[in-house]
Amino acid sequence: MIWQFVKRELKALFKDPGFLLLVFGGPLFYSIFYPLPYTYDVARHIPVAVLDEDKSFYSRKLVQILGAEEELLPLAYEAVPNVKQALEKREIFGVVIIPRDFGKNIMKGITQRVPIYTDGSYPIYYKQTTAALQRAIKTMSAGVEIQKLRAYGAGKSAPLLRSPIRLNIKNLYSPSGAYRGYLVPAVFVTVTYQIILMVIGLRAGTLREWKKQYPAQFTPFLVWIGKMISFLMFMLLYFFYLFVCMFRLYGFSGGTHLGPWLAVYILFSWATVGLGLTLGSLFKERESSVMFIVVTSLPLVFISGVIWPVWKMPLLIRVLRLCVPITYGITGVVRVFVMNGSLADITPYLVGCLGLAVLFSFTSYYAIKKRFPIQI
Image (cartoon, rainbow, N blue to C red):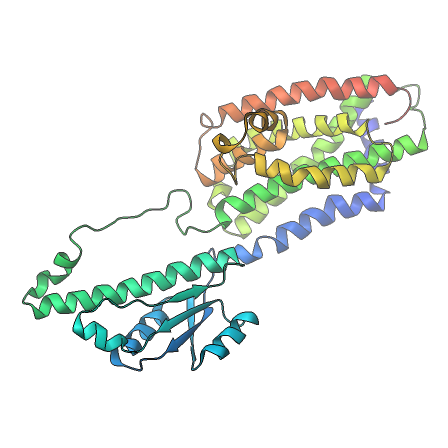
């Protein structure tokens, strides 16, 4: 009897063009087009203008060092107006001005400042450009200091005298310092959350508009469990498509840690479907669900803790975030795929998802029973 209802529900869903567009078009679009900008982790060959007003050996040396940075593509400019025009047209995203007497001041031992300007309107370009420009200038400065120390008789010990303490920096969880490793998995969780809630809302809104009754052989419990199974099937389909196939396609290392994440994802899916069925009873028109989910999804991503630290949030927000499944889904996937967490590390997220799953199971069953036998 349950599978009869599931078959009936799936057949009705596949006859709905809006459902087909959401359930298949959404994951396909996001999984292909969203990760593409982050494929190489860091931006490379960013065009920057180099205005060399000195034309000396040392200025040419600096230009050579700038060209060795893989993030930069130095372009020679002769006048400030041309640089401004190129910057306004987004032909360049950074400017390096090598002032007059640059080489003379270095020979005299006078501290020389090199102005650099970067376009801050593109955060990814800004970060990579600024870091690469600073690194190139520091490399140039270190080379000049080492030459002077050797001239004073330091010999082979000049590099050690110049830098007696060296940093050994290691970026934990994101070795390249890029966004891809933690942002794309979080977006995939958000996509599954958004789409399944929209689909459930569309289905509930359509049934409320029709005001039809369920056949006599169906009970409220059978309707509830049949709907849960139907939509959970799509959540599992998303899991294997996004977190197995697409993860391996894009080279995410987390694709090998499926056990702990599958445990979180199953409970996350259960809680999300329960929430969707609960909210579905509130939507009188099918379009209302789409507007509600679109408006609320982005704030929920911000309060999940993956973008902004939880302890920086107001107390009310910290409490609110514990009441939505997406919080545990996003933090769980980041903990497993980005931070290589084990099953023990994600126990709090398992407990949180389980609590919400049980809560929303009761509320969704009550919503269906309250309107039974009217379809919802």
